[in-house]
Image 1: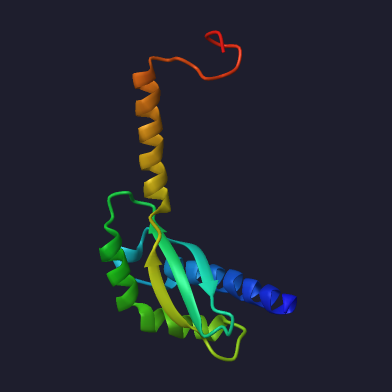
Image 2 (image 1 turned 135 degrees about the vertical axis):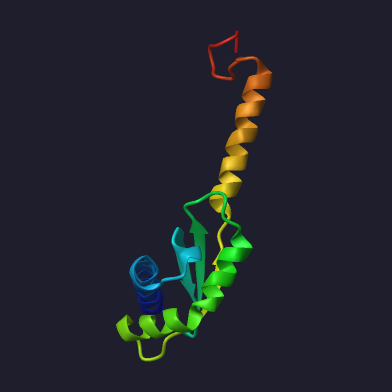
Length: 129
């Protein structure tokens, strides 16, 4: 059992590395120019790979980016097949990863809360705490 985990983890890392290179070098779709692969999860039997991606440009629409990935999927999968060291290439399922955008929103909320707090601190020893 533990050996399967290590194998799937190696395959995930390999897929992420190869896909990042394919998108950076081989894909000519300008919609994918700022795309970044953030994570890859493969099923236990290695039949499906969920590819999580985001964009370096915060103004890019995730739906449009996902559409671009679906348009280029056949090309990407073919390139992946030529470089991947498994017998059968997993089915690729692209998912937009909006964690960076959600993190930025949380940062803004925290900054706003601190500004409303008037600079008071919750640290021990400050303001009589």
